[in-house]
Length: 178
Image (cartoon, rainbow, N blue to C red; front, side):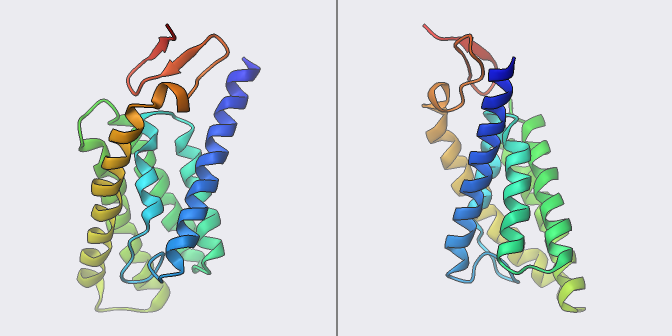
């Protein structure tokens, strides 16, 4: 039981760290925050289809990323909560094809423009922000994230080890290693 908890915490920490690194990388191109953002780290929002440890990992990674990219307190709190909601949605829809990519897109598409509008005082920018954030999320999650899920599915039995009994998580069920 302790080994399973250690694996869960390790997976969550690795996902959080990867989210931060990818966000900081894309931030060098000024695409991690603002009205136009293609946060490639959001592609990791598909990981809850492989492991529930991705849910806290994505949330913690988003909080840390938002702090490090000098986001406003509103973005740190509500932007990170949008990623958390999206991660839960992806986990709940993990048995669907492609539909699992939509919860993070929808959550961020509606929350982030509201946060930017409030934080930056952009009163008339709601629809512009909704479209630009939505397009960035579609690129990051529906395209890059979906491709990532297809690639990882081939190796999920190796990457997402679940417990000391040799069971691996295969997206839909845990299976015994042959």
